[in-house]
Image (cartoon, rainbow, N blue to C red; front, side, top):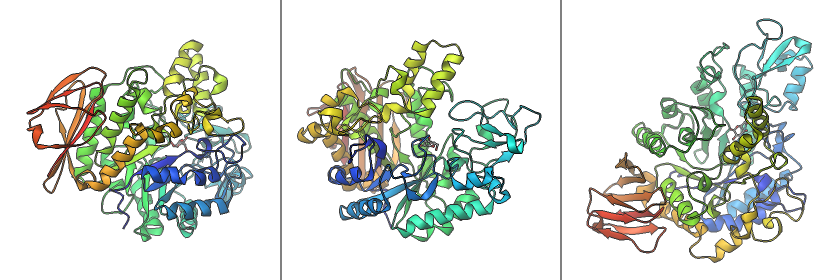
Length: 549
Ligand code: GLC
């Protein structure tokens, strides 16, 4: 069985990873070229975000054809070669399956629009209560009402995301069969990992107006969600113990995740949850500027750590992905302690209980894009909200300030390979601008520097393989209310690990309940430590990992 507890996953956003043919877009051959780099880091899996045929309204999360490769990314032969070449290096691929919705260009939706009743029932079409009024007041995650009117039927279809991403009707058994066929097809190609996009939204509950929120309570973790996941598991990936799966759980509850990611293996191997990444939101409202709440961040992460453990369920642990701003810009300090804070943040995540995910460039300490002109932004969500924010009365300047913090494009700028033109990403015109700091934040420089963030991530990955306590141990939060220290203990069969991290740029003294001298320091972002008895004097953003058997 694949031991996902000892594994680390590296996420590739192919469009921004490496362009092999100079058209400005990253591609599959570009990924093949960089496999040695990924192997050097030491990861076990590569999660590839979607590269299936797609009009790219949402960069591939709008799938037109689940069985074919978008020519912009390459060919089926390229996918097969990528899989073979990765396997040679002991790395497996995880494909990204988007089944809450399709693209409106998908033939199922095209047939639905043409009036074919079989395919109309693949989607969620409803009448409005009266002319001009959509069936419910639910909001699309990308802004605006979640229903689109189709005059021909005098009906609306549901799109929880962009208008070009109609939601599939999972209550229709034929839809579920089609989804199974897609997974079986990719299993047939030897794929051993699957990520399921916003999969906890597939079972819709009542189609009612939401007077308290944006509608999410009517479609999140819906009534048949566990039934549908179990069915999918039994019919497809559950038949192969080598396959690992992760579900992206939007606005989920912990209680549901106990089931989604239970060790009994009936649903998925693990889950992504996002509550810890809303600590710089106002409630669920992302398009605001508020400083991050450190106490909340710790509380949420610790709650999930402890309770998922108690209920024998498994987390994916992460700071970054293609939807999140860069963590070093978000919770670290790029100006003064770029290296230290990036390493500290990596330590907090990698020593937790769960499978760590690294998003391309995180291992280099890549930072937010900082775009200051709308023409630089490409993401549909950012473009919509730039408009919506101004419609709500914010100045253009305010709207830019918010995008600079929260836009998904912050993490979608091209991978910085070297200090040359376009950071070595492409010889052509990149589809989105390369961050200027590629002059000093880049893979080439970091590979040469012993003390780089890259080499620190390499050590974090190696540590998980070396110490069973990281993979299998229990988690005990320490000094939870401390205003600047993030500390926890791991324990497994007599092995103990203490992870002590200063989350801020000010020195701080931390007192442990243990005699720290009994521990050996196995990793830190500083060379020298000030430890005496049970006391440690932490330098700015210092992280120490202490071990004892
Ligand atoms: C997920 C993806 C995101 C996409 C959305 C709709 O949240 O990670 O990139 O836009 O689903 O598919």
